[in-house]
Length: 369
Image (tube, rainbow, N blue to C red):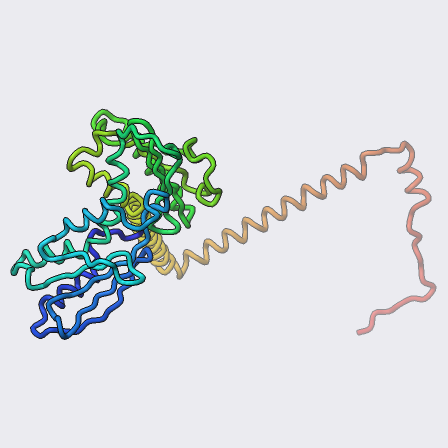
């Protein structure tokens, strides 16, 4: 998800206003969020201390295990969120997957009230993470069933699916990476290569191994072409049993759910850093050019009386001399070509027969004064 947080900021704001209101308010509000998530907050004047919250969210997995709505494990995880304040209403409101009843009288006063409302606002994140937790907890499960090695496609945004492949003693999570700009692809590719280098070091030996490949991994053979057509390659994480023990399970799940958001955040920050550096470099170059042009202008103004005219005169003289030399060289070449072939006796013939005749006038002319 482009902006994935545990607690919904808009839902938290509405619940806090309802809780802090001096007079009971009647609310019938529909709230839509990124990722096809819908909330319906409803409070009646007859029962102002109970607020009904209905949630509609796309299931994280479209596989056979979760095709019948929320699983029992997910329901139990939701019940554990502020159990003193919130209860599950069955059946859920039509068009929604879950309906909760919130009793504001049981919310403690002070800072604990904000904490409780924040937990209630994170129910949708609990639903998503609980589905992935249920899969990761069965890493060492020896139960065999049909399609055990078949990739499970997990979707919380149509353009950002990822795959979970269950294998003996480990689970592989594969993320197809897609970017709109070519510059983002270059930045992300460098980031993935750096991520592999850091993950293979001794200091980070306990984290899930990360691999990046420009082509789909063998585990995704047979998947749809539209799911495998990417311009940023494929990032894979190998999750073993010690990665899902105790508190590590929640961290591992949250890291996987926020991997797309983390990569986009890194690419955006890197692109902004590069643009700022280029802008500063451009400004420094412009300052240098402006300084040089101002100094040159002052120099020209200082020598405008005599220096500039003298320079123009030197340039004009040099050009005339060059042109004259070229003309002399060309004339010499022409003379060489003209007199290269010599015929003996031709000079005598020319003096005798090719003379211009002299004409004399019978009339005389006198100079007029």
